[in-house]
Amino acid sequence: MDATKNLAKVLADIADAETSAGRPAGSVGLVAVSKTKPVEEIRPVIAAGRRVFGENRVQEAQSKWPQLKAETPDLELHLIGPLQSNKTADAVALFDVIQTVDREKIAREIAREIKKQGRAPGLFIQVNTGSEPQKAGIEPDAAAAFVDLCRSELGLTIRGLMCIPPFDENPGPHFALLANIAREAGLEELSMGMSDDYPIAIAFGATQVRVGSAIFGARNTH
Ligand SMILES: *Cc1c(COP(=O)(O)O)cnc(C)c1O
Image (tube, rainbow, N blue to C red; front, side, top):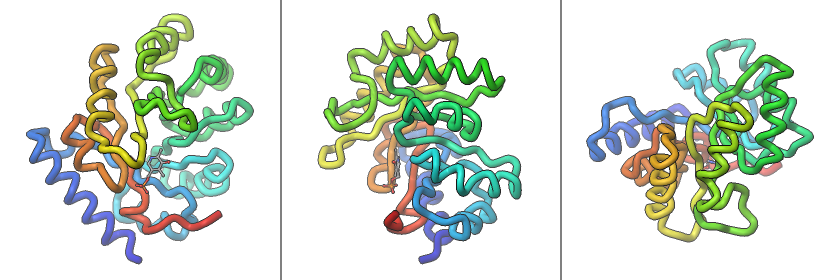
């Protein structure tokens, strides 16, 4: 498995999707999702020029990224998995972007930690576009009010919205729904699209895609 070869293909696909969608070249960011992968498999992807990475567990990220960030200071690390409130301080300390703000309690704790630490990660709100009971994310019809609360009451700067569509459904309508909610809330960034559907997400306006297995191969088991 050659991650840098896979990466080149993903970057070419992103460029093609940008062109097909009539969007400027380079307008879609790539978050390389390295969860379950050891640092030795991540280093070649950094050496190939990638700077933005995603991890879904705070503890796993703490065991991998301090050393990688020390080697390459301009890395940007995104939390893309659910955040437990007892991990909020660690997450605010380590991550540059938290994509999974999904409830009032966690938003309040993030706001408190930002004040305390004087460090403010970029924030995305996760929307449960399929209203799946087992999935994290704010309900679509509660999203606008939640964005408001984060901004006016908690003083948080929200960059955009993130979603993970139900795996067994056509993702297009979910991407369209997320784009609509963002437009109405005046949010510019859309984090949507994974290995199976990132070109579709780009057609629906994704500003960043989160791609794991198409770059790093199948996940290692924990
Ligand atoms: C694992 C994960 C990804 C990447 O998934 P792939 O299908 O391997 O590209 C993207 N987003 C989130 C939230 C994830 O947990």
